[in-house]
Length: 305
Image (tube, rainbow, N blue to C red; front, top):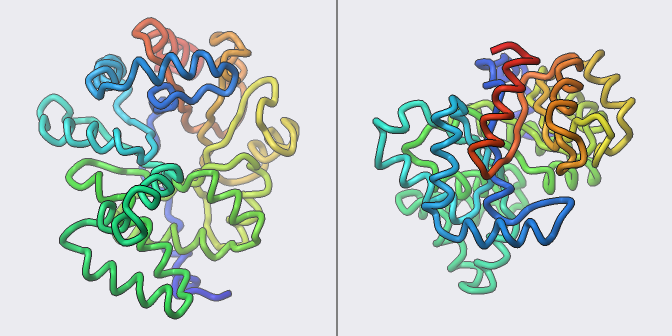
């Protein structure tokens, strides 16, 4: 299927500013732990209050980790509001939204119905435009209109804060891979660049397969986040395939699950990561000052301050 952005991806392929070496993730705030359900529940209870989230973000920020790679969970809207209200304190703070947050939509439709959910998420001043665009999209099966409508809905909470990178979550990326709908990647890329003047990023559980698809979609040197760790934890296709594309392919790699949810000691994990080619950035989650400081120091030691 051809799209209206098909001929524009070449101009959009220019590499943007280099990413920070360390990105701070949000799994720990919302009870996500791939190794321990008990630990996940304890973390979810601890961070029921937004103030508790801000306390941890402040520790990371004061350690020089200024970029927050986050879902579009409702609680992140509260974090964005606090940052927005204190521009002096958070002058260098940036968000890297990861969308969509599927549970949010499912819960909103259950509670408010389809129209109520749309009203809840869409920017108020753009509601009529979005409704018209969405109506046309659904009426004509215009996939580009649907995709851009959903991006705008997700981005509403980040108005007035810096969002230099906007990510498409692996739940959608890998679904599109399975469907073979590669044009959607070009639509996302174009809309993020032109409307939000941000760099698009793609999160996946199958790095080699996604890179092939992005090549076919005409996206050059893309930013891609995937599990990259010493033991091959949740690395679809195997660790050898990942190491091969890191050596041979042109893209900007962001590593997640570096510690394999605690299966690899931090020093060992980061030392191994530093030996891999083409790693531009690493995302990690932590909930204590000690772990945040330790990770920053290890990254400085092995990657250079």
